[in-house]
Image (cartoon, rainbow, N blue to C red; front, side, top):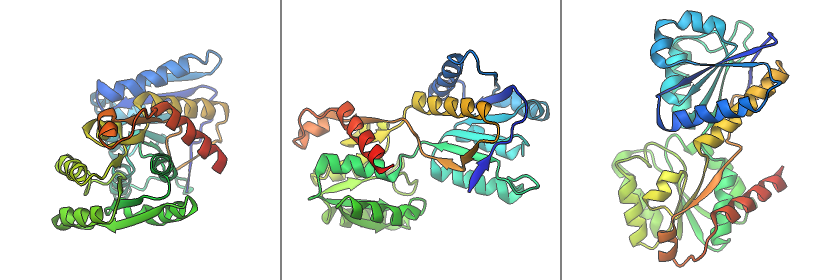
Length: 310
C-alpha cells in the first residue's frame, strides 16, 4: 500500500517533532536541517515543535503544516493520537513499534482521507533482510549453519528470509519463538544446530533483559552473533548493519526535497533505510579468529550487491 502526500502549495511547510530534545532525536533533526539548508532554491519551510507545544496548540500547528515528521516512536504516537489531518512521515522507528502504534491509532481514528488514501508512512530503522544476509554471507561464506530466531513481530519476515537465503545459497535454521517462558530453552536448542546466530529486531527475543544472556551464552558456545544495531555490536555481537541518526535524517531530508519538487509523489507506506554502515566489535572478532575486518569494505561490498539486485 502506498502513502500519498498531497501538497498543493508552492512552499512545503514541514513540521518536525522530536520525541525528546537530546540524543539521537536531535541528531536526526540536525541532519534534516543541514541537508535542507544545502538547497537554497528549494521552497521549503521547516518548523521545529516539541511535544508540549504540540499538545497545547495541536489544531493551529496542524492547520499550518503540509507534512509532519515525528522523530522517534513517542512523537509518532502523540501525533497519531492527535488525529492530525496533515500527512505524516515517521522516522527513527522500528517496524514492530510503528505497526503497533499505527494499529492502535487506526482502531480509534482511521488514518485515511475520505477518498481512502493512506496518509501515514515511515522510514524504518530496521535493516532490510537482504542487507543482513549479505553481511552474514560475506563474513561466513555459504558453509556455516545460520540460526535465526523469530518472535511474533519478526515471523512475517520468514518467507522473505527463506527465499533470499536460498538464492544466496545459505543454510538457515529458523526457530519460531512465541512465548517468553520457553525463550531460553528454544534459543539453546537453536544454538546447538547453528554455527552463527542472526538477529532481527523482535521485542520478545532481543530486549534489555535477554541481550546479555544471549550474547554470553553464544560466546561460550563459540557462536558469533550478527546483530541489527550499533549498540548490539558494542554489547558483544560480532557485527551488524545499521543506520545512524544522521543517515536517517539525510534520507528524510531527501524525501522532503523530492516531495517539494513533485507534490503528487507517492511514498511507500514503509521504507527501509537507504543509507547504512557496518559496525564490527574488534575484540569479539579477534576472539573468533577474524583479523583485520574492515567495516567500510564490508559496507561497500554490500552496497554493490544491493545494486546488482536492482
